Image 1 (cartoon, helix red, strand yellow):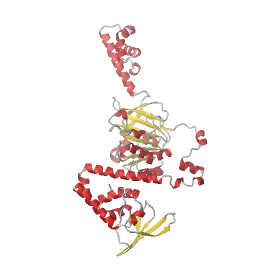
Image 2: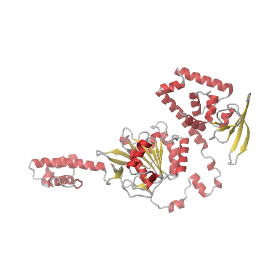
Image 3: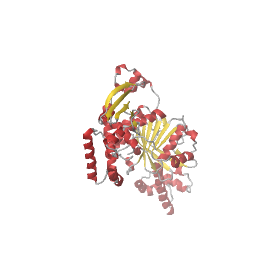
Image 4: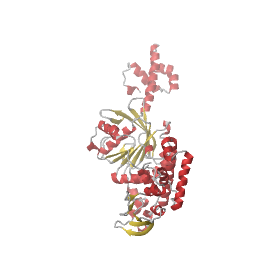
Length: 491
């Protein structure tokens, strides 16, 4: 875990008062600042003079008063833990920063630290750093334990802070404030709103809705959704549908590199930098996992800054932490991130890897789909560069359950083919070929090929193969035309 990550964890898990008092500092005064916050001064007398720290908020580092010899004028909570409680033992500091253990002071702290260090080294036979470096399985278990402790602490803090200042003094709030802070429904306004659902892409992406797209690795799902995102942001046609007014699109990507993947793809699609002003593409963004409180806060800041209408998360499993088979991961994502996007009427799409059993959709718990309004899986067909988007869940009415997508090159494009299901077309084609083969066998035996006699001789076989009388007669016409009838009309 990096220093920045541990700084964030320590901010989440510890408060300034117990941290400062645990190493002997006492509060001497509090002053009001112009911005409405308070500055608290903490002091401790030593043999070499008085040490003084200034503290404002829990999120800000403490400032060391001028005159004290130190290479650091700003002290994060993690610096207190690392310096005073862990004696610069990095692994011990990592444990303390990410857990909610009580931090002791004085002789008790010294005894506790000595005991912890000896216990770790005796049980492992080597230092924590050596074990983490040499034993991947131990490091995996160690990091999982730290994440679980941090997640528990975040959940406890969220629960403790629920119903905070924003929900106090409700009687003093205006009606607009009540609607904003409590989600109160304005029945009159709701009944008067008869506008239809706004579709960014017909049947596929709907304003304010939560979407999911599981697909197998390497199929080109990022390629498809990146083109859709760029087209929506630039006001171009999407999948061959009529172009619409541009929207603001935020794309969070932990999969593709800017120079090697993103740039050449967009160039192949015919885009130039000036076309992408509304396409905010964040490549490997440094944000906390979106199923944590800190991750939700980071996302909230991004939403405030970019003001998107649509957010892509590519891929979901790389933006969350914990066991993806656990329902808690998906539930925590919705708690900290998904719900806020829905509250703001921001649509989002979670791109995900498909599981071993494609019929079951994305890897992990079924709870992953609870918050989703529309789910479209992406799969290959037998024809090269032709794919099927198949709907598995729709909380809004859609006109088609399958969309056939064709990928073309020069320029790179994805286009929705006819509304017919490609799988159905393939099945019809297979039956047509079988019927033609059966009729060709009769023809080779000098059969008269009249409809009545053909059905009499082939009817039992056709019934067993699921070939109807109409389908058989279409195949008969195809054979009698010398195989010149158009394929589409033949099936």
